[in-house]
Length: 371
Length: 134
Image (cartoon, rainbow over all chains, first blue to last red; front, side, top):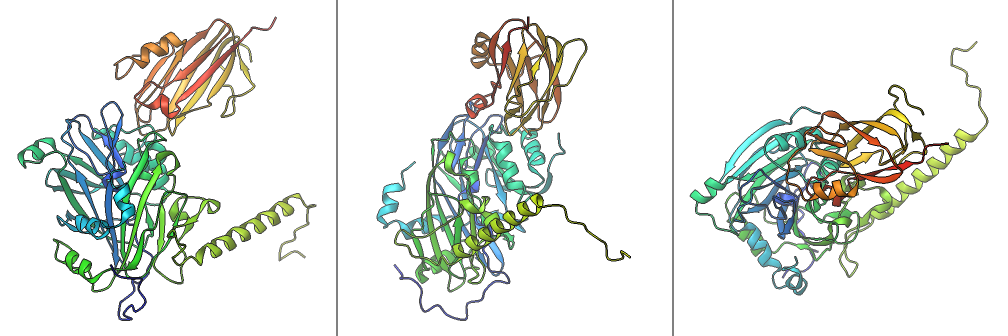
C-alpha cells in the first residue's frame, strides 16, 4: 500500500475549480430504492419491497473528479426476488454521458481495501407538473432516465411511472431539489433481465460523466425508505486530483484511506471499459459509512482546493451540525472547521447586532435629498 | 366558534387551543412531507367537522378518522384507495378532497394514513372531543 503522498508531482493539473463534484457514493442506486408497480430488481442500497419493507444491500460507489468532470460509477444489482424496484438518485448537474460502466472498477477498488482489517469486519454489515425528461438510456436490463425538476415534479414523474415512493420521500426529495434539480431514475426491466440471463446478485455498473463544480455527495438518500434504526452501510470511494477536504454532518462516516492512489491501482482502473481517462496521479479517499438511517440526515461536502473550504450548504446541514471527516488518528487537513467556526461566530455577532437594532429606540432616517 | 354554516378555524401546527363547534365547522388540513398540519384539533361534542384536505406531496396519502376499530380494519385492509365516505379520504399526489365526520361524544380519536409504512413514519394526528359547554 502506498503511504501518504508527500512527493506529489507538481505537473498534476488542478481543475478550473477544484472542489469535487458530487460524487455520490452510495447513492447510486442506492439511495432511493423505490418500489415499482411490480417486477424485480434493485439497486445497491436499500431495497423496498411491495409492502414497503426494505432489505439492505451494501452500496459501493466511486466518484472521481478530474479536469472539472465527475465520473460517477455505481452498480445496480438484480435481486431476482420478483419485485420491481427502482431508484432515484440526486445528481449535482446534467450528465453528458450515461453509459455502461466497466465490469470491475468497483471490484478493483474493493480489492484495494480488502486487506484492511476494519473493512473485513464491516463488509457484511449489513400538484405539480411532471419532471422534464432530459435523457433516457437502456443499459442491459436497466432503464435509466435523467430528470430535471423540483421535488414535486420528480415525485410526480416517479409516481406516474410506477414508483411507489416511501413516506419519507417527499421530504428527502425536497432536501435535494433545493440544491440541484437533476435526478436519475433507474429501474430494471424484468423481461430484459431474463432475456440477458441475469441472475440474482448480478450487478450492472453504470457510469455518469458529469461536468460540474458542485461539491456535494449525496448520502442522506441512502436512508430513504429505511426504518430509523436500520443501519445504512456504504463504501464511498473518491478519486481526486488533490487531497480533498471533507465535511459531513454527523457520526458514521469514517475516513479509512486518504493517500496517493497506488499506481498499480490507477493502471488497473485505466484498463477497464470507459476508464481510460484515469490520469497517472490521483488521490484516493475511502470512507466507509455505517450509521442508522435516522441519523443519516447529511451529505458529504468536498473541496479539493487547498484554499477553499467545503461548503456547509453542500452537506445539507446547518453550520452548527458540521463535522469534519477525519481519520481515527486525527489525520487529514482540517483547517477549514476554523473557518466554519469563524463564519458561525460572525453570524452570531450579526444576529445579536440585528436583535439590538430591532429593540433599540427608533431612529429618524432622512433621505439623501432631504432639504 | 359556534355552528351554523361553515367557518374556517385557524389552528397552529401542533394543534390549537381553539375548540371547534358545536355545530358545523370546516377544518383545513394540509399534508406535507407525510405529516398532517395541523396535527391535532379540538372539537366539542356535537360538532360536525368538514375536513378539507390538501395533499401537497408528490405521493398518495389518505386520511382516516375514527375509533380504533376503524383503524384496525384499515391497518389490515388491502384497498389501495377508499371511496369517499365519512371520515375516510384517499388523495393522489396534489389534489384536495373533503370528508365529513360527526364527533358526537367525548373521546380522543386518531387521524391516520394507513398506506404502507405511513403510520410508522409518523403520519398520525388526532381529534380531542371535549364536552359541550353547559
